[in-house]
Image (cartoon, rainbow, N blue to C red):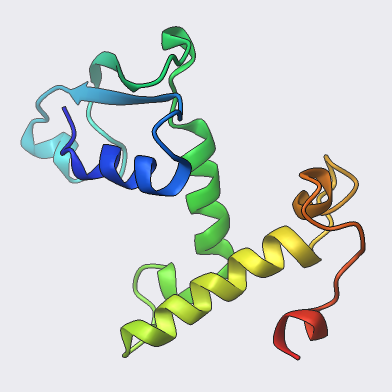
Amino acid sequence: MLPPCYADAVERGFGADADYGQILKVYGQQDANEARRCSPAKLVSVNRAVVSGNPDEPLISTSYVERQNLTMRMHMRRLTRLTNAFSKKFENFQAAVSLHFAYYNFVRIHKTLRMMPAMAGDVTDRVWRVQNLIG
């Protein structure tokens, strides 16, 4: 299973009552010709485990977190491989990630919600602009 640091991070971020599960995918061996391709090895098994709370075990999935990771990589070039747009200081990286999430949740209107996530979650009742974040 995955290291306990993930469970600790979930508890610090969401509290002890969070429904949290982990998924571990096991892949088969690749021969030398297959290892040169960009596609992953054949999936052998998928193991789901409840870590805390009471999640619905068949619904434990990586879909949401992988979608968020993709969104972050597409919006922040510093997270893209083989780029020169990286942060030399960790503080600059933290500021870039914070600005991304603030923009994503408070400024950007999401098509599926037809509003900002902060409005959908009743965190704010008005539309923000970038100037509200940086000014």
